[in-house]
Structures are given as C-alpha cells and as structure tokens.
Image (tube, rainbow over the protein chains, first blue to last red):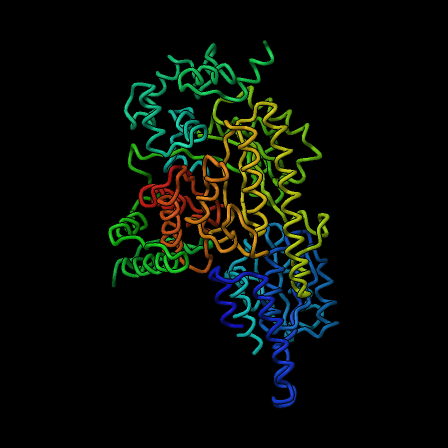
Length: 167
Length: 103
Length: 355
C-alpha cells in the first residue's frame, strides 16, 4: 500500500486503483490472519474522524484524504462537509478516535479548524486526540498558530503525517 | 495582484494595444509572436510599440478604436469594437448582434 | 558570512537565503517537475536567469520592454465586489463597474463576467440576469469580454446534486458505482455548460472561460473538453479559454477518455493537446504552490512544467498565476515582490503567451 500511495501521488495510479489495492490487502490480511500472531494482522493503525468544517461545502479533497487514510489501514469516519463543529467532538467521543482531520478550502472557514481545537480543549479531550489540518488556505504556519499537531499538503502527506503521529 | 502582473508583464490593455493582441490570440489562436506581428503590421508600428503608451495613444485616437481615458466624442463600447473589426479584419460577436438589431 | 537575499516561502512569509541555497532550491524544484512529468528540466542558463530574477535588488521587477504579454482576467469583477472569502475586496459596485475598472483603471487586456458563486451549475436558474449583464458589458466595453465560471462537478454530487457522491461510494468499495456517478455527473455538466453558453453567445458574449478544469478530477476534465467540443462546433468564432485547476489531472474515475486518451494522470504538456483538439483557443496551464517550500523551489518547479506545456502546445498558453499557483505564494494578498518575480520568470523563461 505504501507503493500504491507513492504511485497515486505521481499520477500513475488513480483512486479506483487505490481502493482495489486496499480491498485486496484487506482480503489478503483476512486470509493470513490465522498464520499471524493474534490480532496483529488485522489491527487498525488508528481511528480518524475526518471532515470539512461548518460553512464550507468543499468535499472532494477531503474525500480523497479519507480514502487514502482508509487505504493505508486507518479506520476512518468521514463525517462529510459543512459539518457543525460540535459534530466533530461528538464523533470523536463516539468512535474513541485517535485523530481528527479538519479540512477547509476557504479563508473564511479556516477559523473553524481553530474552533474545533478550542472545543477539544473545553471538553478535556485535546491531549488524547491528534489534530491534522489541511485545505488550500491552510499552511504549516497556520497549523502551528492554532495549536494543531500537523498540517498536510496533500492526501499522500496526510497518510505519512498520520503514521508519524499515531504509530 | 492583477495590477502587479500588468505592471510586470502586461500589455496594459487599452493604454496600449493589449486588447488587440489578445483578440488575435482568442479569435485566431495566434501565439504571442504571431499575434504581435499581425497587429503591428496592421498598425504600421514595431512589436515593441504595441506596449508603448506614447505611440499607441495617438494611434488609438486616430483609428477611433477606444482610448483608456474618457475623451468626449471618441468611439466607445460597440462603436469602438466595430472600428477594431475593420482594423483587424475579424468579426466580433456583439457587433454582429448589434447589426442584426438595427437591420 | 555569505550575502543573503530575501525571498518568500510558499505561504508568503519572508525568508533570507544565500545565493547557493536559492540555486539549490531552484534546481530541486525543476528536478521535481522533470521527474514527475517526465519532461526536461530547465537548462543551467535558465536556472541562472531565474536566480538573477529572484535575487534582483528591486522590490518590483518586470519583463524587458517588448516582451510584454496579454494579461487575461478570471473570476470576473468578484475581485472588486466580492466579500465572502473569494478574495474580493468588498467594494459595493455593479459587475459592469467592476469590469470597466479592470479595463480603464487596471489596464487589463481581457476581462470576463462571472457570478458570485462562480460555478456553471448555479448560473442556469439566473441565466436571464447573466445575459442582461453581459449585454450591458458588451455595449460599454472595448476589451474582449468572456463569461467565466468553474465546471465544478462537485456540485453534481450528493448532497448538492442528483448523483451519488463518488467519494462515499469509493470508500464503501463501490468502485464501478462511483465511476458511473462521475460519468453521469460529467454528462449532466456538459448539458448545463453548453446550454448556458448558448444563451450568453446569443447576447453578444465574446466567449467562455472554463476556469479550474479538473478541480473535481478527471470527470471534470471530461465534461469540460466535451463542452468545448460542442461549443466550438456550434460557434466557430467563439473565444474559448481552457484553464486548469492543477498540474495533474486527478484520477477520481481513472478510465475516462477524450479522443482516445485517458484523462487521469495527465500533466500540463499532455493536457494542452487535448484542449486544442477539443477546440480551445487558449490553454491555461497551472502548477500549484507548495506552501511548505520556498518561492525558489516553487518557481523552479512551476516554470519547468509551464515551459514544457508551452513547447508542446499548438495554441497560445496563458499560464494561471493567481494566489497559490504559478510560483506565487498561497496568500490572499500575495507580496508584490513575489508576484512580479514569478511574472517575469514565466514570460522570459517559460515563454508563455499570456498570463
């Protein structure tokens, strides 16, 4: 799957191929489960809630990130776009997520990323949940400014950063 | 930002001959060199003159193809574009529609 | 200590680097483009020229007299009256006034009319308004005046449109269903875009700008190229600009073709031939800015991609150089030093026909 991710980034493989590869990997892991140490093969890399913040209807970039994270072995809960900020908190609690991905494509909705981080703090959850931000106007400097754990430039980088933070 | 681009690289539209060169690019898919050659030949100037406000101001007034400042009596809008059609030997859609309207 | 020169990060922040480090970043950016696109890197002379442009002491730089190119304008007058996060400056002005400001005050070479949402789909219900505004603009303006919007196939998927969201289908491993949805959305988009432009041509519009083709992946490009082909057939003299969204056509579907070529995975030099074949007069290649890299890296990468597109192209190339593309920082108020340097490099090194 690592190689599939690289080829996707290079425009040699496309989203359907990524999903086919992920599907094949899951099937392979299932077949080999008995041969592997208990649970080792099927364990998810981590649980991630991913969505585009409220007021922002952009969906496609976020959907690609979700797909790539899922294909890499994370359990991804994509809660859509234009998501009320409280819904991120509720979904994190419900799924006991390790990380939340916050997407925004407009400068005006970028603020929502900061507000979710504040909500995490208010709910005493910040230390337990890593925060990744992305989207065209987001930058590494912005991530640092609002106290996110990382910024990812694209879907492939999102997988790399998620692995760095969660594994 | 558009102003920064125009100052750095632009032909400055009606201040000089940018609109004319752009029309040839759009209407005949001419590359920049060909479009400049075509327009400069029509105007009887050099390619460099096409971005020279000093040269082009007088030519635009003489040919009545629209000038950047609001000179009373100079052709504006469709009137200026009809003169551009004659100069460049092209048809401009809104001029066609205008002619259909008054026919 | 080596002399340091100021330049920008991809997010616009000012940084200082030595000439050697700047050159290393230019080389790395060029190499990245060359590697991804399987295209030639810039020559040593071209990289040296880029270095000279970046380290030029003046705040503003410009092309040599005689090398100027037309600067076309996308997004319409939204830049003037927009105030909802679309980079507009919120000046209450009609679109006619905004367009005339571009023509008479800014010295724009072409202009376009666009509506506040700037996607084709929502134009359909307000087409009479758009026709009326276009008619008034054509009566008053002299420079070429196009109609522009984004194909934006995202609006055709649930919850915004009639077709099931391929992102959701894909995540559920319903791959063929996702592909079918993308194709259906594309076909619907073609119908809408052609219908809209038929009506605008009827009131004297000069032509059309397809802005950010491929933003929703290969389905977006499929819809745009087929719309261009249909419009060219119906309006032989129509001005058609095909402007891209990024350097790579993302493969959401993966198998859609135009003229026997798979659209997914195409780089600028491969995209331009298809745009020309469909009937575009002008192609707008794009290279997105990486905000975590320097402007030297971004400009090297961007100019390399654009140069290859210009060389492969049978039609003029007007490179997209708004915020976050073409080596320009991703910032709503891109620094003038960075904009003018990118502008000059793109004209004098990549050899673009316009901006």
